[in-house]
Amino acid sequence: MATFVLVHGAFQGGWVWGRVDEALTELGHKVLRPTLGGCGLHRARPDAALGLGLYAQELARYLKDEGLINVTLVGHSYAGLVCGLAAAALPEAVVRLVLVDGVLPKPGASFADMAGEPFGKLLQAHALPGGLVRPWPLESFGVTPEAAAWFQERLGPFPLAAFTEPCPKDFMFSGAKRSFISCIPAKNPLLRLMANRAESEGWDVHALMSGHCAMVSAPLELSGLLHSLVRADPQTGAADESGMPRLDRRLLEDMRRQVHWTCRRLTQGDESAEGTPVQLAKPCGEKC
Image (cartoon, rainbow, N blue to C red; front, side, top):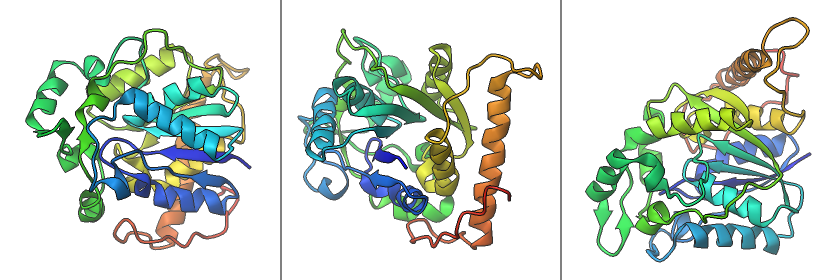
């Protein structure tokens, strides 16, 4: 089975991947979920000096220190930038890069550059003293109402420099296989732009019916999709012998898989508050 390294987005921590970790582990995978500096369990000591470059170095150092090879590196939202740079720095270790509603690195551009003027105003409105930014409004994260309190109390400030430091001008993606999971429906124009860009650049693009933080709002569905990515090579966008575009066939397969995992969740009565450990049933062969 695969080795997954799951990297959280801005304001969060490794805690956000807990239920996905549990599901993938039961499916036989090795899972690690590092916490970036100043985040998660370190949020009482935020560090305004941390920017994109230092976060990428930190993640690359983590992969090296753990002696990891054949890694499927998964980045959510802001962490798409961090994971893209870390994968490029360690091409011998990362065999697949997966972005979940993630931001793709662009040479010479920062997160703020790609997000545009509205995001700049949001940064100003959420600025804290000392070069930090307080979390966005909770609705931006797309978590379920049941998870809202659990999620919000674990958020912490994030360094402004992480949003304003540009990607190196000489950046190039590594040769790792690249997959993009687009959480739909979503209204964020930057994330829609990222999904379109991933498709235009030949990424293996998939859809997930979920809020932006799918690891909280649809953890089993996301786990099932990640599991499927490491079991088979991505399909191309060409038409097959039936004449149906393979991208459309892939979307139908994504929907079928999500129905399966949703059935598992509902069968287990898993409608309680997020963060409660899930007792997964044994795989049913994806026949639900």
